[in-house]
Image (cartoon, rainbow, N blue to C red):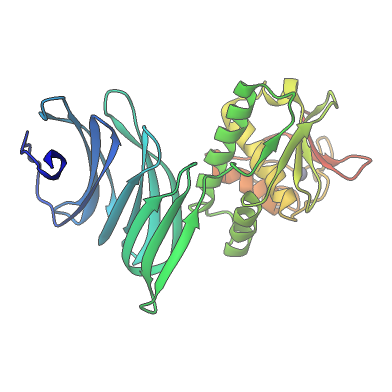
Length: 302
Ligand SMILES: [Zn+2]
């Protein structure tokens, strides 16, 4: 049968490699993940034409790696599973544009591993098989942040995309954030795994609101989408912290002699919802958050 034969076509080479894996994005593009001479992760995109000629495209780099596996999530994204410099499993999503340039996106981490392999199961989900710290086989399923979130039909598709993108940015800032402790980060990450409903807040002074331990964020369409990108992410991570069970006292505003001010680390700005805002862009918003008559924490413009 002719299908059982292979014919050698084009060849190309790149630098030193000590570990590697390959995945295809489509009929004309592959992505290589390798360990380079410095023991760092390096991704290289190659295009292959109808004649099998190879053309090297973009390169991406990341930290120390001692095991690698790669799989394509869709036609423009790959997911790397690697053993990082601490010996832990780390997933990194990379996006490849039309020209073949590659950009690092989200990260997920798990426990100690010594071997790893990843596969995709469609609908932006992956399964990682690993040899865990005890030498046993362990499988972990991974999904995409916010895919379990729902949105009132009043939100436009563009608005839903903004909410998702801002949530994903906020989620990706949690791991490296220095203003939340381990328990506060874990509670926030667990909340991102829940089905959070996004509804409409019609209070003309509100940007968004949420209940403590709730599973709903209410968004004022006009006010929230008038905010700049960092404020949108700060607002969402603040409200997610309320959904995670964290509260804060009502803010004392000037001219009160003991007025709360961003960065004072006091009862208001030192609380977990306000400390979470620092994870976004290193600062706290100057938007006050109060409990309304229904008990929801409402972020308003001053
Ligand atoms: Zn609040």
